[in-house]
Structures are given as C-alpha cells and as structure tokens.
Image (cartoon, rainbow, N blue to C red; front, side, top):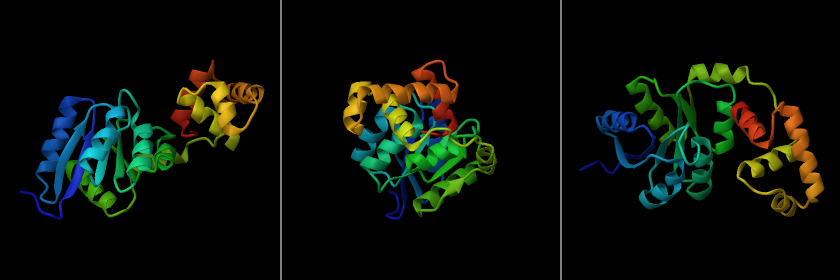
Length: 206
C-alpha cells in the first residue's frame, strides 16, 4: 500500500516500451505512485478527471492531440494537476509552448532516472523545471512577428474553427478574419494556413 503522502502521477506516452520503462522507473521511488496511463493526447483529460493525479507527465508529440495542447486542456479542466512535458529533442519554441500550456516544466526523454523523479517532485511542489539544453534553445527562439489578434485568429484556426465562427467569436467580419489569415501566412512564410499553424506552433508563437 502506498503512503498517503505519495505523489500521484499519470503518464501520457504513446510508445508502450517507453511508457512501461517510465512506470517501472518511478515505481522504485517510495514517494511516487503511477496511478494512470494514456497513449493519446485526447485521452489525457478524460483519464485525469477520473483518476485525479497530482502530476501529469506528458510526451510532447502524442497522437490525437499533441502534448502541449493536451496540457493546456488539462490545465483548464483540472488546474490542481500540474503538468511536466517530455520532449525528445529540444526545439526553440518548446519553452514558450510550455508556458502557454500552463505546464510547470519541460524535460528531455533522455533525462537520467533520478533527475526525472526529482523533476516530478519539484513540479508537485509547484516549482518550475526546465532542462538546461531546452533553456538555451529558447534563447535562440525568434520573437513572434504576429500581433496579439493574429495569434488569437491562428489559435482558433489551429483548432479547426472555420472563418465564420472565428469572426463571430472575435466580433470581426469574415473578411477581416480572412485578411488576418493572409497576413499570418505571409509573415510566417508558410505555404498555407495549415503550414502557418505548424510553423507558429514549432516556434512557440501559439
């Protein structure tokens, strides 16, 4: 039986071998208990609201819904659960995406076992955790060329919201929304709207 003071952890990772390794690793820690698992981003919130973990360890590249989006939805739905995001390779925009998602930290998959456990403990205490390599990558991240309104429009477009609904939600005309999307594509150097979402997401602008 686990201690009443155990940190309840949910692991969201699509690679079963890696997920199993994390479960085995954390099970050796007396004060950490893995109480739930998910293999898709769209499973994170439903599992979390049922199991009520203290910390969610979420892979950044989950299928269904990416880890950053899943973390943002989890923060909105269950703010008592703090999120720690794992990334395979540091990207310049990842740290900004962590902040935008309301997550508490970002670590590499290759983080040594003891450091991973300590990172979970820090996040459980409400402390921020950032891998040094990712912090240095963030220093090289370009500033966003998008205006706050363009960011709003692109975030809604990234969720699949059609221009008419974006216009209604933001109290704009459809023509204005389309103009914003055209400027966004030009500013990001994208081929189209989908490419603009990808570029802005990787840069941490949305």
